[in-house]
Amino acid sequence: MHSLSYKVALGGIISSMCLLCMFLTGIFPALSIVLPMIAGILMMIIAAEINTSWAFLTFAATSLLSLFVTFDKEASLFYIMLFGHYPIIKKYIDKVKPKVLNIAVKAVIFNFCVITETILTTILLGGDELYEAIQEHGKIIVIILLVMINFICFVYDMSLEGIFELYKRRIKPKLCSGK
Picture 1 (cartoon, one colour):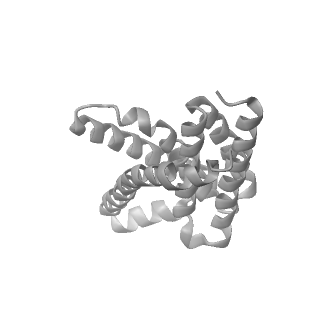
Picture 2: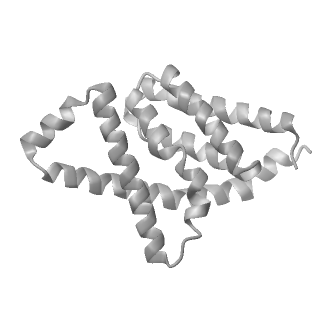
């Protein structure tokens, strides 16, 4: 069992790294989806090292702060609505059997989060360009966007497993060797 000071320190370090990623979305707009993904990966470390509830507490703090420090508010919404919390709940979703049901659950979560993020972006940030593109090109653009984002989400999901194994086998032993 870790002490409270360890939990606070680790939470602070992870939070600062997440906020740095989110801040960088304003500097590198081409990475406005990748950097929230990286920030989400950091939430997995909190969930693994401490517990899920502490990870959600850290996620809540970084979500709120990212709205203030991030120039790219849409990237903040991607982090809040999808990439930040998904790595925390992934270990529970992966327990769903059979594999077909597991994939269906993931697809429902991804699509719910993406659609909610899109609606919030449109309402809060005035994403009128999206509605104009839909009206101009028809519903096919919606289908193409959903297929693309689902592909991105499933690649992210598969990558999380490998990244977590990399953390457990290579990074954590080097960090803990000073104990």
